[in-house]
Length: 114
Length: 112
Picture 1 (cartoon, each protein chain N blue to C red):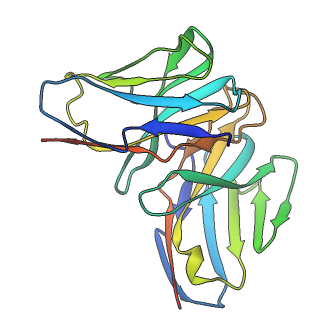
Picture 2: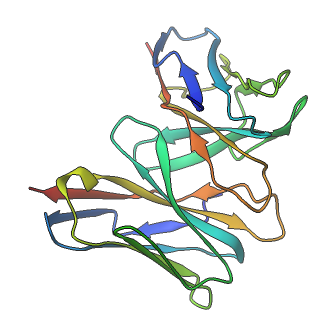
């Protein structure tokens, strides 16, 4: 089945540790996105990539890093510089970041900092 | 920056009733989309309406768009307990990167 796979679903991290969240898609989509969701805050854009080997900062990129070495993969690293990383992270993709706009989401990864 | 804002924040209705949610936004848009999220899950796309469209239907869903008022509404008719979820509007600004930006959502509870 075509779709987006995020892993792990749940992740616990000690303060000061970097963690990497995986996002893989087999939809052959060009664009991929990372959003953060906090209670009552809706979704906020962290990073997005419109093409392989290129990515752009979103509204809340500080403390995060990404790579886009392959079309199907867009991992997100939450670094120790992110001051409040406990949140629900959602990865999405779209055919292009052009006028179509419809996003396909993964099931999310919940990160808890202990 | 968050463009769309949903209203109300929470809505509680009985099965069989209609549910109406509203979304307001600030700048010109290329399109507006509605998504649904069940608790702890990813978002699922429901419907997309373009800036030159005024109304769109999909099953029990009806979406309207009023660009002069910069607002949209999502109507779910004959609601079911399974419609219980959060609903988000997302706007893609015109003239920009078309990256959808999301509001805070409306939490809908449908009581059986």
